[in-house]
Length: 52
Image (cartoon, rainbow, N blue to C red; front, side, top):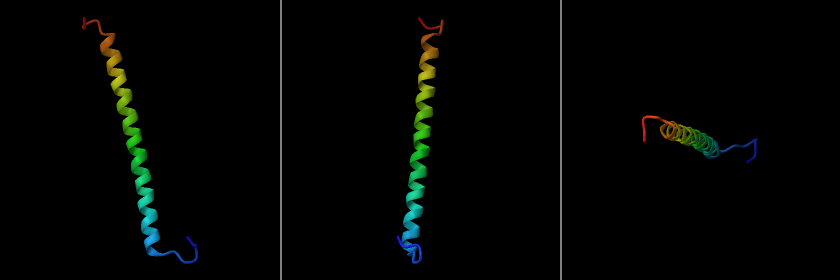
């Protein structure tokens, strides 16, 4: 991509790539958080005196 002559289609393509990268990063964070919460709930349930 030449800096002196950027085509509009290249700008749109770059914006799409940035948006996709951001969406993937956000989903990774959500998946990590969900996994951590799930493990925490299992640990709490396993150590609960109310369950046999």
